[in-house]
Image (tube, rainbow, N blue to C red; front, side, top):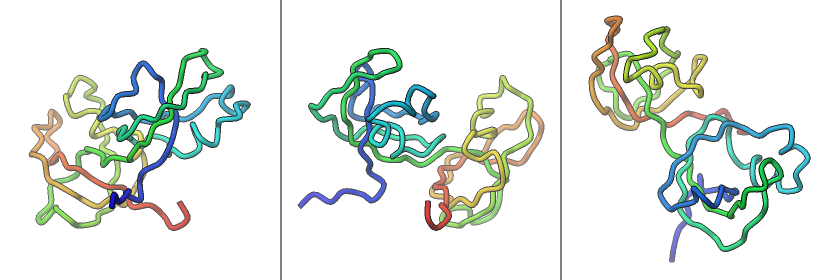
Length: 155
């Protein structure tokens, strides 16, 4: 018996990028999307700024109203995020409140992990895995971690 995980959803993905294992970050819909009859299948199941990985590609195809691109129905699974947090003792499996790091070093390799769009205010996260120490150019004591966002009830 195959068990599906609770975070698996069905959505539409451009046929040219729809490959099993491909990951993407959902940036939200457009004004054109609001007029599309497939809005509830394509945009609504996904949380803005969340990252998803394609786990299955189905045969059904649709045409996107935005650019007439062929879209295919895909099963996707939300993935954990990789962000920086202040270095603390006993990081793995704890829940912390995390603010985005105040930084203007846009050329730093960890900039996107510090200024993650999903964590632009104080958010509760569960540390899933410590990845490594960060060599911060502004001398903050940071580590790179894999996290799962703790959702508020009703989301």
